[in-house]
Amino acid sequence: MESQTTAEKFEFDYYIALGDSMSIDLYPATDAKNIDGCHNDNLGAASLLLVNDDFLFPEFRGKDLSTLNKRLSFANLAFDGATTSDLLQELDALRQFAGKRCFVTLTIGGNDLLACLRLKAVYGSVPVSEVESIFDRLVQIVRAIETILPQSHLIINSIYDPTDGTGRFTESNLFDGQLPVELLVYLNYLIEKFAQNSAQKSAGTKEGGLSISFCNIYKHFLGHGMSSSDGSFWYWRPHPIEPGYLGASEIRRLWWQAVQALA
Image: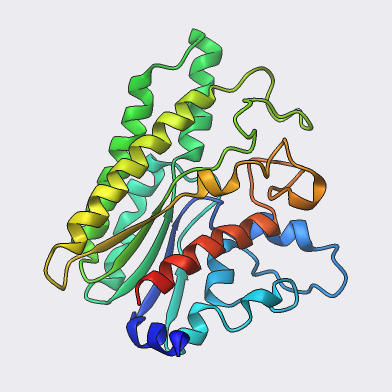
């Protein structure tokens, strides 16, 4: 009965995934390619939310958007390496969906922080103003979505920390030295505060405006990065800033909980 009620509430025309590699298929699919019996290349968080892989994740059998709404169309506009500046330049692509009710997931900001590391290498530190500029661009993205797709629902997400708060990739030579995790914590604080305030405001507005929810990927992923054992490692080991297939499913888990909350 619960799933039926959710299905009645999930009356969207499109599911649109926006942002960076937290939403794409490449790394999760590569991570799972050597698993016997796995022949699915659509294993990113967005793809799993749309259609579950029942072989890898039987607990999510029947718990996906395609089950809720068989007429739902899908557009994955996320791309590897995307930054907030990149996404601001690509938002015109959303105009093709104007007038439609869209369910949108947004993962962005992590690559901006990685770009800040170049500043640290040159200047020895990263100004807090750089983090605030990333946040300002994220707010611009949300406002643009609100303007172009006003009859939609948006999930804003925090950014995970593969180092589990240590600032070090102990099993990878991906980065040398100490990463400024305090900047990630600060950006996530800004994102969470903005998303929660926006969600409260959208809940109090009349029907027809953009509604917003927040998923705390950062908090959910802590302990499943460099400090974890093999069985609970959620990233792709060759390049552990990317999600593995387990990590993609865990992002999907949070999004599915947000979908159920819409009921």
